Length: 289
Image (cartoon, rainbow, N blue to C red; front, side):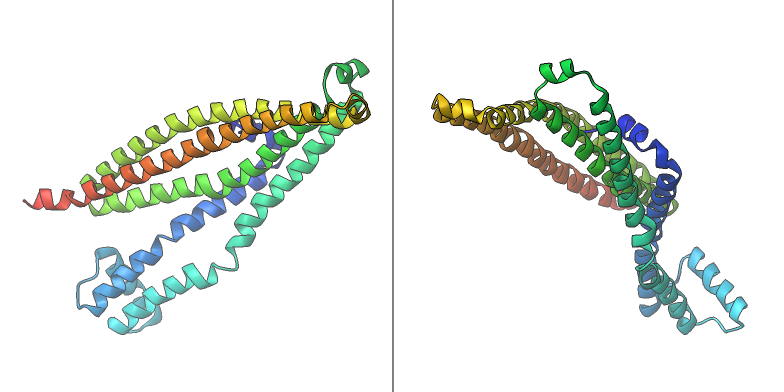
């Protein structure tokens, strides 16, 4: 797995486009928060409950702008219009401002670095190829390019925008009740610290797995290159047994350690998150008592 520092350096050539796409995706995540807010205000109107101060000011501004009298009809029209803009109008725009750039940048960078790798390989001395197995070299190059290609869309399209959404939620909660916001902030850092600790451990295991895969691919390449020798000495069974052992070792590392580790992490995350949410819901009741 590529580190954040390596990813930033890897994509530095397209940093302006990356900044734009990340900013656009983050903005869309924050704008999404307007939908539940508008639905809440619509429910207030339908149940004859008062609007909050922000909504009253917004509707009053629209009434002044359109020279229409304030009332339930105008209020519902304002919030339905906001929901329409945030959902229907935004729908065909977001894929091009976000997803398109995330993958376009990743694929362009993959092409650039693939060319750089080939250029470097052609300049290396023959002694390098005598000391290093072709399968090992090819596998290492392929994994490096693949890791960086997949990592960027995850960071730019998911991680950073989701963090911006969390910031937006925190600010809204702070505006409603600072006690709940502080509890939200504390719980967020507890969950983050807990998750990062396990993620660091799992990343170290993935690096060990990379070495296992590299050894397996290297040996597979040697078998293919020396297949005539293998067949002439009738060692097919021995080679199959060795490769089966290597593949079993990879499977155990992936399934019993790494995959199981991520499942356990997700299990504990869900438990901690739901516990924090339940604890936060008790705050207003405790304050009222």
